[in-house]
Image 1 (tube, rainbow, N blue to C red):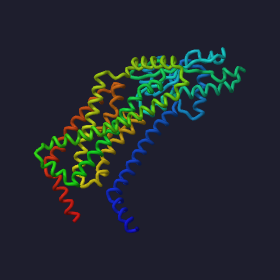
Image 2: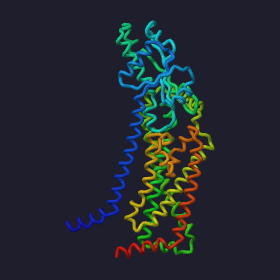
Image 3: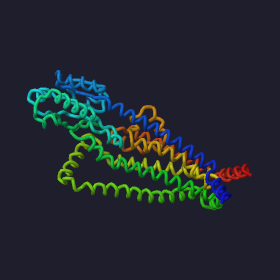
Image 4: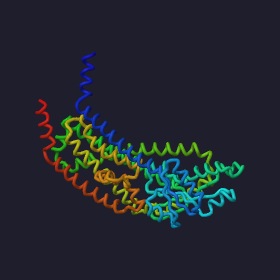
Length: 428
């Protein structure tokens, strides 16, 4: 029993497996570091309060002082300009607008007042949903409630509970509209998050399928026979890639359908508490706001997204053919797929939790990965970053052409067999 156990463990715990674990550990640590840095930057920004003070009274000055006492960094201006202009010039992500006459309403008339909460929408990532609500407006409302409670202005408890209400405004593409940014993100994020998920599954599944298949054929010595047949090697490569692509599409369709069923089931559970007429009106208003802000993707834009999707899959398939050809046996296929897995996981995860286009130096490293441009394609089109979109497409075309040329050269030569023979001689 002990000898059999040692034999099985020696086969499973080989150098390739341990190296794969080490690489996976490094990958997780690096990804965690990048995500932590991104979240920390977002939290640091949330500690700032941006105020557009149009009232300019002693009371609004007390609001600023109270916020500073609580440890917030307050940035205030008093310019009466369009919101999109102010947020662009000040490089703010949000702002709370204190309207003219606010002090008179609260202190003299003892009536609730309304302030505008403005949010700049720059991405439809998951993290943007969590931070889409205007933090500055929330902080201002909290401080106003505290100040009024300390002043004991009235016994009307209802007034003290809600002295300030907000009107949401969203800024994007140099325009502003009265709309809730979280609702806008929610209406856009479903496809913007579903497509990267399906793409990630396609890349991972196709690469693993091809690498394993080619490695198994090398082990069974059927690849040598197949490549020695009168059938052109380019046809053989194309058939393998197409078969892997069809299989991966089936997997991705099943996973995507499961995601949609789960989403619809969640909607059904909450539908009983939703006013259908109100929900329909909200949907219409949201779509109007999307059109006003220019967040819709035109038909030709979707064509470009599909082209980038096909280019990305083509790159993954071609790279997998090369890696599979260099693998000695089926045991090394998992290790061989790590370069594709790493190159896919980094841009996929980061595109889900942050805006890659808004990163500092890290984004240029990510742009070197051809898969990144497909993950951010819809964001580029929604926020009119067409230069990055078409530049990424051109880069993908060049990358695919280069890697396809390398794959054809590899399979048209005898390197596959001489390499394998040399490795066996070394082992012996």
